[in-house]
Image (cartoon, rainbow, N blue to C red):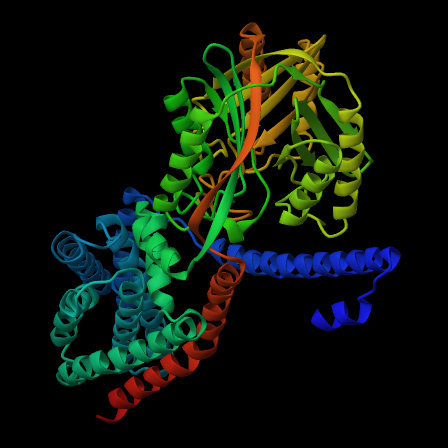
Length: 639
């Protein structure tokens, strides 16, 4: 970069403009490459997240456990003893194994795993069910070989191998998902398999098999092999995180599991606070008031993520609630610019931003009594909407009906520079974030967005400013949940009447919306007498990481009843229209210093860590556990 500046340094004005243009294009290209790299990393992380699964219900776990234990006992013994006697033995064996497993799971969940873990009785039973499924595979394999070769010891040997596999699976599961003392960890891992071995030992002793005398020695040996192989496996996984971030991979995974299962945000946020970087963040405020505050539009240059209740995921609804409580008016928080690299690290950072934003909004003096009409300009790809209040403006962008995702900071810098050239003192920049229909092609869209912005600004500053009125209202649909894609902020409509024109700013607390819904809403608003407007989402990530598959969330309108949703928007707009009154406005931006955000580099490393850990696990799982299995088989055959 320094060499480029040196080569093109020139005194004459034309050459200097060319240098600036070349540097701007180079910076833009580098910025987009960085964002594309981050997007690819996050896509890989989402893909891993989508491979998670939901556990069966309590009743399903109980029934599946009973059926698998009794069915396993019946099938294996009937193969060995194809008679009524075999059926009886099998049923009794299966019931004994099920009873032992149930007793072990109850004891583990109530006495060992009660504090500091995610394991209630259902989850403990589900883990045992998965372990028993692995165990059953070995039992059936042994029974099949016994029938083919006529050696009943094969069934016993493979049953013991299944016992060892179950112990290894439990060791990996408990160490990966919970942090507890070694005593509790080992007790939880060993209790259920050892109790389930008791009915098998009694049965083998009853049929007089000679291998039974070697079982105690094998059990001790299998515990040693299981511990060594499991901790070797986990050591390699932890080293991936240590090399990338200086922390164990499993610590991050445990923190995620605690949030995913129990909703605990503190462990994950503690990690993000350590990894994050300090930045100054901005919040743009547009306040309308008469004798008292009427409405506030707050636009944070903060990304509301990363997911669920972590970091700034709930910032839009939290900021809305605080503004409304402290100012006694309607507030809305549409999405600003920037992406996940500007996720806040914790609730503590949220509180800092909210405290200063509310204080600034309260003290902001309204002075502008005139406004321009609402202007919308589209160039076939990008659409810009703008309205000016005195010397301040609010401008928004969308690519609808094509996909629009997070916009780079470059757009905001460009727009504010262009607004200043046209005599405006401040410009709040909003990403409408209101259409998703496949992957976004932002690199090809930047020039279109800039073109729409300049044309929109040219048009809006040329219009006469008139006295205006504002009304605002919020509707919170009770039937739309976080899982449906509706955040706690609901639907807010701010209607501005300037001259004969009525324009609506509709803000929905969700993460993007399905393509075409924006157009349906605008059409419905027009039919009720609203001349212009735009629909925004807050990009709240409180709705993310609640469902599995796809994006990990539902965009607004994907699973909601769209007719009802549009009806709620109309209800909010009608209420706002009936509440119109003359007001004054002021728009300003505040900076909140020393806020901990994730940062692009650390965020990309976090996302890549997930992928690298999975890839490492795939590479080492077979060599480690196959070696463990071979050692156990050699012990059974030669000891």
